[in-house]
Length: 175
Image (cartoon, rainbow, N blue to C red):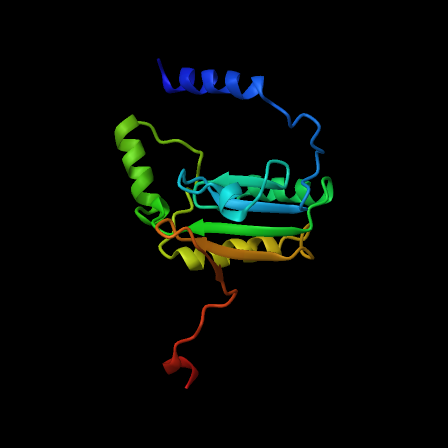
């Protein structure tokens, strides 16, 4: 049995007990979350959310790509979300490569040079990535007035840490 077959069987059991058909389309907590797709992040559980509480948009690295921004804009303007959260995490695979390294690997493995994706959005510093994504969202003209906060989830402890918007200067720089 394939993994897909296993999850289809699990869905049959889920559907037999399904009781959420009357949930409203807009998220109950008026919250949208952009998070990394890492399987160790159970976004609803780590934030104490239930099905229907928030829109959760996920991709590799929790990047505010064109598609993620499209989803956030729709979430706010059509479905009433009033706050956005960006969540990245420790031990992220996105810090283990550069875009050029991955492109070279893919071209070598496949023998093909593809036009898209043009970027994989790798990064070296998780907190700096959160700051970048928060800034991208905050600076988009369609969602400029929405509060956006960024966090890093620790995959070892389960704790969420707020990321300050500006990198803290070292004591040498501020002296």
